[in-house]
Image 1 (cartoon, one colour):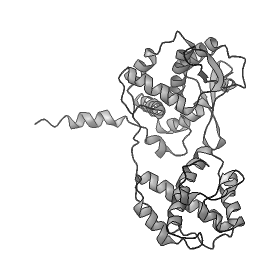
Image 2 (cartoon, helix red, strand yellow; image 1 turned 180 degrees about the horizontal axis):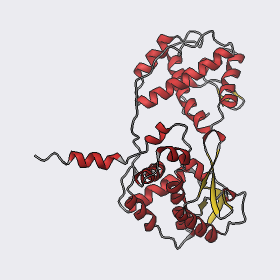
Image 3 (cartoon, rainbow, N blue to C red; image 1 turned 180 degrees about the vertical axis):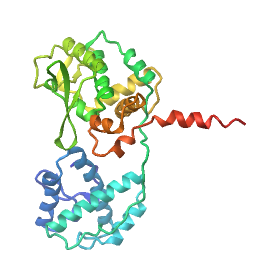
Image 4 (cartoon, rainbow, N blue to C red; image 1 turned 45 degrees about the vertical axis):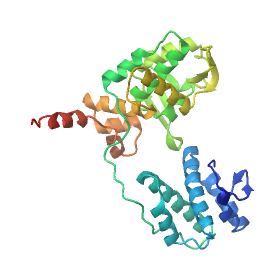
Length: 322
């Protein structure tokens, strides 16, 4: 549970976690229940960090106004949401975190009712994602621009190729071990560790297979089945380590390579998920199959990545001749 704490947020430490002062003031049961919320109830590390930051800010705000955990009411929660300076999605996420925490405290009989239960967040309807999407030509230019005479270049090309051709999240890709690229009959497959501990298996596109084979051969890791597939490198030496590449490592690499060939500034890891889905749909693929490949729970989520209509819209606008 890592977040920057103000003086009003600092409390005692229980089971290695910092408990905000407003929770600690409620006694040992309150503190213990708060710690259990993050350790026993939330298993995803990213969700835990996001909720910790949101809840920490809210409880710090309450403490500054001399509220106690049992005196926080819907008016206080609504006032906090009203003055929140974040974007609408951020505010909605923070309210969700607060609501879930208080539900947990109610079930644990720390407080009688959930003060956030009746508070409504800002309206926010998303019909189109904001992730920058590359054209097929831009994606090909990026892949071809990578110097593949080194293991690092082969690694980077394989990493981007896997994201483009499997619609995979960067967290799932860097989480792969060597054994997660495996052969079944004549086909090679990827085993991706997606959100919620789910394993998602996807056939490997022939381009991605070529990129992975070249990288694995150059890195000499084909027998290290339990070790990370994508690894960090020792600076300036070009040698790969046994340490797993992180999402931030991958983002820095992509930013650097995108900048080198003049791609949009917003190009990021998620760009390749959106680019792959758009290219697939543009070539006759269906939303249903794109949803299955991307391991989305709902086709509405997949549709957010579909930018096939962008060019049609622009063509129609250009018909306005004045």
